[in-house]
Amino acid sequence: MTTLTSTLRLPAALLLSCALAACGGYTAVNLGGAVAGLTTSGLVLANGTASTVTIPVNATIYTFPNQIDVNAAFAITVQTQPARLTCAVANATGRASGIAITTANVVCVPNKYTLGGTIANLNTAGLVLTNGSDTFSPAAGAQSFTMPTTVADGTSYGVAVLTQPAGQTCSVAAGTGTAIMGAGPVTSVQVNCV
Image (cartoon, rainbow, N blue to C red; front, side, top):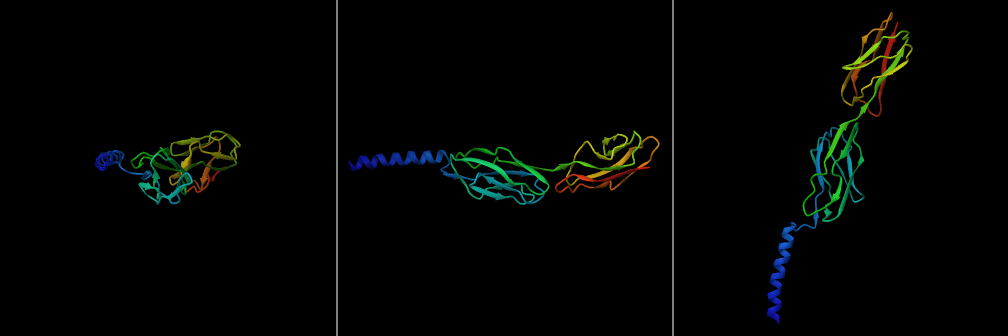
């Protein structure tokens, strides 16, 4: 009887070893991915309520500090957006298999805001304002304007008069700068007409 039991133990142990080898033998795996466009600090990701990770500026990869169990579900969210950027996670949900998850990729893009300001004494039509290739023609009597195309944080802008209105001359003050937008639009451009 002892010989039969010993004889059966060896094949059973080999079968278990092969099964573990087939799935990598892991009971928990790393969770992470690539990072693109993270140029400011403050990005924090969360995997449900189980774990968080703060990703440093200019990182190209990340891994959560806690591994997740094989067959466990994961759901990654952006807990805190970095300054002046908006980040999103691709492949943010799924279920862990026996290999590390390296495809929960993060892409960050600069925030975009409107660019505009005030207009004083515009009595006639025909004024055309420009910011690069973006143009806008306010109506006679307009007291404010917003350029049609938003400006990405960190990019330069330069509002100028492309076409003067009939019978008037308009100038632009505070029309150039770099859009360090912070939390809102640029509204400080001033157009004065005489």
